Image (cartoon, rainbow, N blue to C red):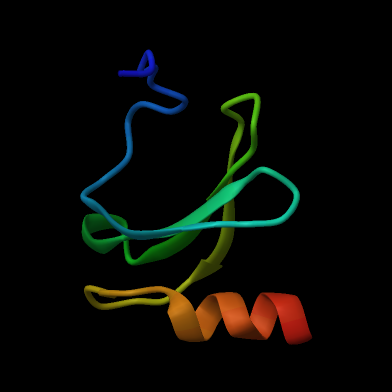
Length: 67
């Protein structure tokens, strides 16, 4: 089994991670009402505030990729 390592901490109920071509991971933080990108180096950036309790990220990622 491959070694497992944490790339980010302090996320507020992360859900629905999607791996992006650039090596980042995009997910929603349900408790924060946010769409968040985690860079390969672990840097966290808020892509957008969704409000409420978002669950799932596929539609948001489609918008990021397709513009």
